[in-house]
Length: 226
Image (tube, rainbow, N blue to C red; front, side, top):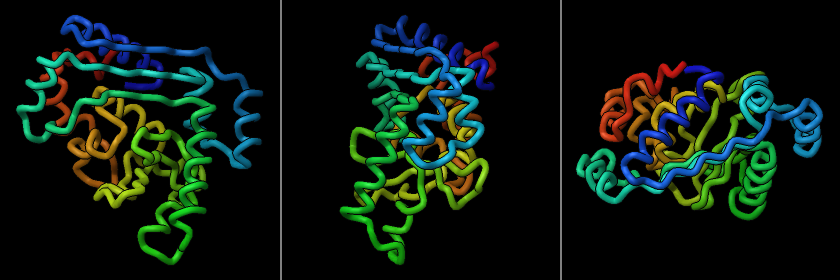
């Protein structure tokens, strides 16, 4: 899968789950202009990595995806204990959302995680927000990991085991693998079953991911959609 295939994969996911009586919402906005990306960087006072700028300029400046899974299908999936907590499928990535996510990080740092010497607090520092999560957590870029293409990491505000876990070695790896696991949920429990190594990130080809796509009824072409 590549950036050029992401939307087609999401459309196939939508089509497949619609047939199971699940409710699926997919909204894809226009491509971001150079001026819009530069304006976002000015507001952030930070440069976006090239892989993220490429995503906004070649895929969309705002993608919103949500699945309300059919109850019968959800119960069938949750029979597998590895996927018991699965149920909230979503993806929300946008230029404006990055600004909101960065504001959220700065608020958490100022109000709760201000000590850069504390093992838990320091994970919140030197980050650039990507997406806010409904539970208050944040998905972010770790600016200390790589200057040009930083790791994508999970930031938990309430002691989740996955606090600081790498979700992708860079944004492109993260978004492709996350769509590859059918956007299984932004909260930590949504992606944890598909992370075999928290220093590498989501693996859409791991055994759990293959089994998960089969339970959803997705054809193998889903991750090779042309």
